[in-house]
Image (cartoon, rainbow, N blue to C red; front, side, top):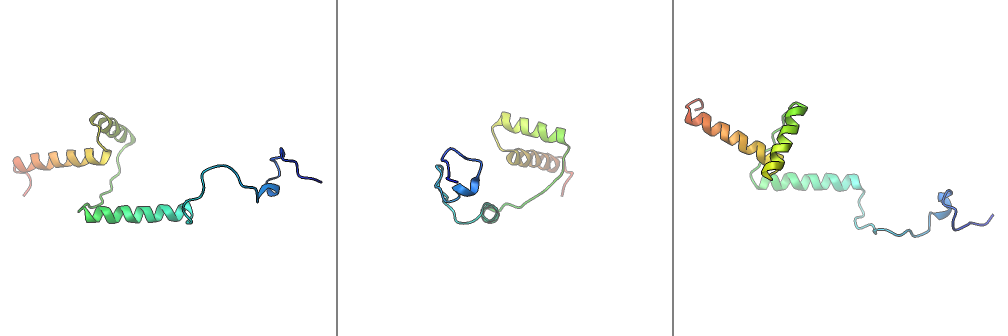
Amino acid sequence: MAKQQTDRTTLDLFANEKRPGRPKTNPLPRETQLKINKRNQLKRDRENGLKRVELKVEAEMLERLNQLALQQNVSRAELIQSILKQQIDSALVAGQLI
């Protein structure tokens, strides 16, 4: 049986055929690329003096934070950092923190 060029249901017949599209630019699999990128991001953060803090919030609060960050044209992390800084500064002024 001859291979018909319009038959796309039998993929093994077209395994060696070059397909149009973006060429592969990185020899590593995507999962490995993501791990390397994350490692590099954490390294940049450490070099910039940043520390990681994780917290859990309710979905409604997260949505409100996202909306406020969008309105102020800042990232959510920047917004949370500014809110924390304001609270700490006001607590220091009120004499609540040492």
